[in-house]
Amino acid sequence: MASSTSIETAPKSTDTLLPKLDFSAGSLDLVVEFGGGLDALIKQELLKNVNGAKQAQIKFPKQIDQHPATIQDLIFHLRDFYVKDKPELFCVGDKVRPGILVIINEMDWEIVEDNADEYAYKLQDKDHIAFISTLHGG
Figure (tube, one colour):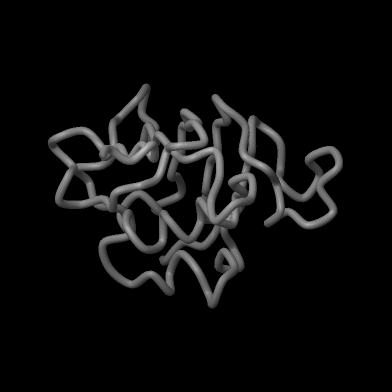
């Protein structure tokens, strides 16, 4: 007898790069952008160049472990499956590294309405999330 849980995978070209995710509660279509040099940390085959911006189109589960998906869940996913080397340049522990701006739908995540804890932000379908490094070598 077939299970009622639906498991989907990423497109064929990235099957070996990304984990299988549980979409039984539905999915969110997200655009995640990497700027200020952060794109160099990301597996290039997962990025598209859109008008000069390095972006990933991500289909993400609406729920993770029985709770609505948050930006913290997305950050863990990006750290674990999109960063090719040196995840400590993207995250320190379970937080985004200091010096990386996080922009949600063109607003700094620290001022997104009703968002006392920026890591608790509940992802919405069609969110555009940008991670921009303000740290540069010289």
